[in-house]
Length: 229
Picture 1 (cartoon, rainbow, N blue to C red):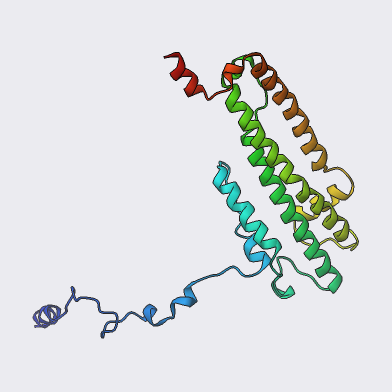
Picture 2: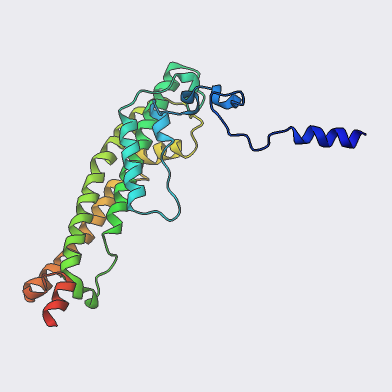
């Protein structure tokens, strides 16, 4: 008897009813305003947390990180209660802000250097000169990225000096280590960038001398192949 009544009850259930948003079967989640599900970055820390660098990255990911971090530099900070670490005094919060500015500038600088390295070559061998025209253009791009990194390094040093005025270590992990290494001179990206630019000048000289000797090689490799054919 029970099985018969259960079977009859099951036949009355409409398993395949058409879902109507404003009908009797409206889901509870649809009553929640859509805006509650959205997250919009507003503060410096929000944009900083959008920074992401995978182990294997490409140009677009580096450019995206630069974009977010540059926006972060123009935003105001969260309320101290919602900072990325605990700050108990105004002096600590002052140091926190300068450390964040320092670190963001360093990350932008690093991203520009990574972009530059993707257009640079560690060595120029004789067989690389078959692509002398491409190397000339690539080295020009690399140089522009390396030089773009310089002002962000200078800014990072300024903020490191300001943060160093407060003799308290904040719980910001390696950011405090960066500050210490910058003010003590252990970390000097100015020297590193100059080294990259000097080496790049040497490689550009090799390419320029080759193109001066063989001016017909100053064309894209594919164009040269078409000419020979």
